[in-house]
Image 1 (tube, rainbow, N blue to C red):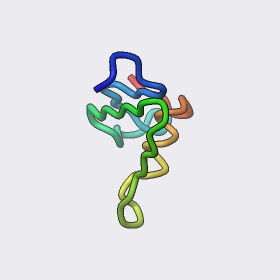
Image 2: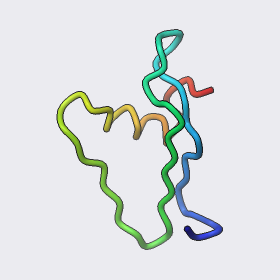
Image 3: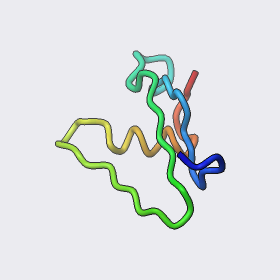
Image 4: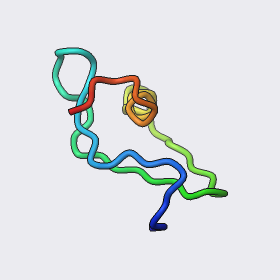
Length: 60
């Protein structure tokens, strides 16, 4: 992994509000110039992961 990723979410754990955690110790890093995709079936957590990466979830 590049020492200075363009986008990083490191050891993310959390979920929506005070509800149960949806993500558990997830890490993602994208280097400048890379194309990254998140794929999976409906309900797998793709949108939740993106919201976490962009700071739209209550992560702890």
